[in-house]
Length: 190
Image 1 (tube, rainbow, N blue to C red):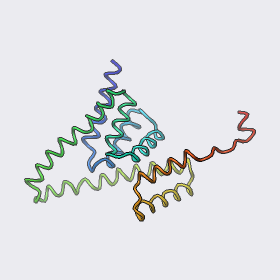
Image 2 (image 1 turned 30 degrees about the vertical axis):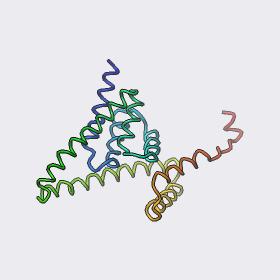
Image 3 (image 1 turned 60 degrees about the horizontal axis):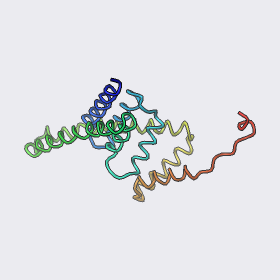
């Protein structure tokens, strides 16, 4: 009974993400965060950030990678399939319906306004997620390191055209290879 309830919650969570994730995969990330971290507490902010970072280094759409991993983590193989179906099917149905609508009425102002009206909402959702990650990074790394890493990553990605996955991968590798800080005698005795 608990497994059925978990699978139902998983399906409904990712169905909401699939239905309301206008703008593609990156715009779905705040919705995934809302469902997975805030609503169901299937993982905490730190784990979510790690999943997002690793997911961004892999090829393919971020929404499906996150749905598959989170679904697996919460409900095993069935949970992964459940979450993937829930996030993909609404997008497929919406694409077929909206492209048909656009093909017939694309020159109408109300159709053009639909796409333009969603942009500010997606922008606010992305800004909120950015601020949340900034606050988390500032709390763990401090202002200077956070701003420096953000500026360097922004420069590499936007000015030099380095793929974001390579930047994230390099940071993950640097974190893995970083030597552990030396412990003082008082810390070692605890």
